[in-house]
Image (cartoon, rainbow, N blue to C red; front, side):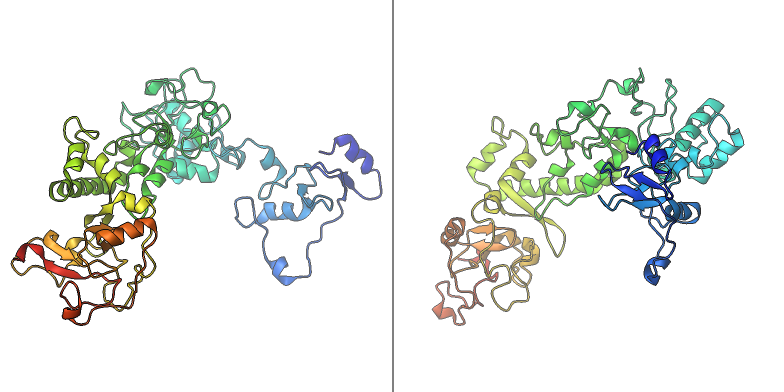
Length: 478
């Protein structure tokens, strides 16, 4: 950073020269600005602020007059206040003014013409709050209104709008605003997050983990366990495990896709997920502010439980059933066992949940279907890569006597044998082919089939291998 004395000495020349404020020490000529480059595309394009918005008015004039780039290090700086990098979108006065208490980047509204709390009248405070979407009806005393208004003017224009939509408007006994979310009831308020406050988080039942205590973080502020940014930047919630997280971060985690097969790991607290195993029936990201986001996932979990119970009742071995019996490894925890033992998918046609085979087939050596299976291996109106439940997969092959689709038997996808396995949610295999798939040694001809029933070991006429083919209802066979 160039000193005032150096600037004064260098300015004694016939032209203004300063040392690069970025630290490289290169002498930079602060000559008159070149208003036009001669390139119409550049001259008509307004410069961008640090938030990506085009500059207009005073900000654009300041940019054209006081922004310089060092020829030595190629870093830009302000020729007026010697700040590096240049504060695009802000004048020198705005850049030196207090920053938003939420994002620590943009200037506060109080430094952009909005009256401070000690200067504004009640009508001015109410008008400013309502204009930016804040609900001030709950502030029955002037002190409460002033606290709410103070929270508004100490934020930047963008954060003020976000806070109005999400933040709690309660003023705590310590005089600070509650750090929780809007709509909290009396017993749900998170409490104070103001650094140095003697009442920090005491309103919510105890202290929260400090930012500096988290190995993945660093610093002294209380931080979100998801994004590791200071909690005070956005409305926060306390999870049942006592960890703190931004409400928006929790909602984003819940909405994130879990993968091709159904899992519920994303419903757990990000801080607890790697430290200890949580049962699948427990939802770590549970809070009244998240109930609407959780509803479809809880409904899906109930559907998986029903499917798992049916799988245990109809197709599980004695050893698998013993796992969930009293004294078993998963005593009474059907969902935990089912998610460890099997994979579950949504039917691509009817959206019902169905069991797609053993989990070890997905995670083991045969985690990927052999070449040719994914594309159908031949001409078929129902490609094998589509994950369909038994009812949808058996359309056209249903039992005429009304037996359940679970009684249907299937030809092995890769040979002329009866299938004993169902893997990846879309492929039937016999014992031999399944063993070869697990070992990675399966060889099969995608274009072959049995046009004549008398030439097929199964005694049926079928299309080329690589497609799914039903052998009919096993309950109807003599």
